[in-house]
Length: 155
Length: 259
Image (cartoon, rainbow over all chains, first blue to last red; front, top):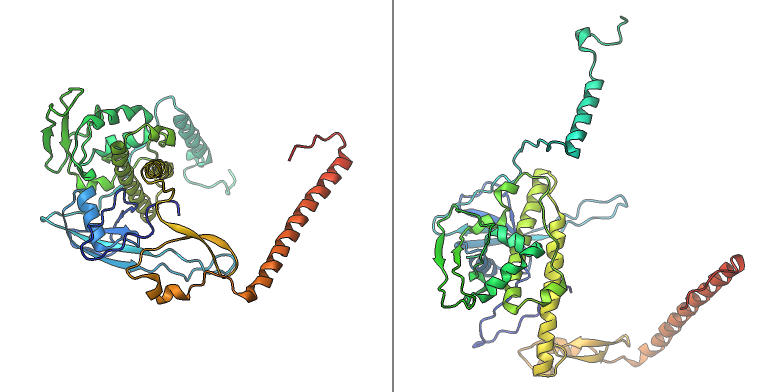
């Protein structure tokens, strides 16, 4: 095990101090919901070991996000696909958490890959490459003086 | 609340911005790691959409008296995403990962804060990766994820080093979790690590079913296993010798490296 965080947390018996986790080893992934979700809901992929309380505390303490309710489910990763050796290939299972934000906050998943006009800098390698590619494409085009008539016809 | 992600990014990955941490160690921030604030020299991210509470640290705390203006940026779920300028880029610049040598120079508070900075950065990169897969677009600079993972691992090793050193000094115990050398049913001696139970071992039925001794009928199989292992070793040694002899025959001037 790469991390030496306790594989076993201390046993809890009545009167024991509250378990506190320093340097949590859990990473959340915010995902775009597949199905339409209410405006105050954010969808996360969380490690299997996390619980609803863990997610709530995580977001409140580390990200300072006011969390209302958390609902979790485990998504089964398919075992149906087969590789070139006809062996079954398992997609990993993962846990999904639906987090409803408190205090009337809303969240919409933004568009992280907008179309950007990429004009290469002057005198750079990219600009020369682009110019070269453009010239090549120009060579492939038929002669405009022929007025759309193909080379198949003589003359 | 937490640092602006620009400074966080810069902090996590760029060596040059290590000096910022020196300022933060002078600030007497309260206990909870989530409440730390950082001073961002020139990469301050301006106005945030959410209402930003600004408060200046009382100068009574600072030994190296410099009036710092720190802002608790409450950007919440925005911290799962990169800076908006980087959306849609094909590559994003990032510095080198933290080395264990650099991390050992940092104080425990700094390492604690760095852990959370790295955690947030990794979360951001994971969301970016997933969204790129969803949109069927290449993720910009995926090496950042590897760098952050390496930094986290190194941080963990440094912290465990310090913990073991402290434990050795205070109690003389080498390992945090108690254990014992025990023989299992197959004749192997291994380090058994103790587990915490609410009841003593003689009341634990499942534990009593586990055998920490080798039965009599297993011993001949242990001998056979040992013989197999010795035969394999001898086979490997003889193969090496034969190949070497063949090479020496072909190339008599060949220099043999010492084993």
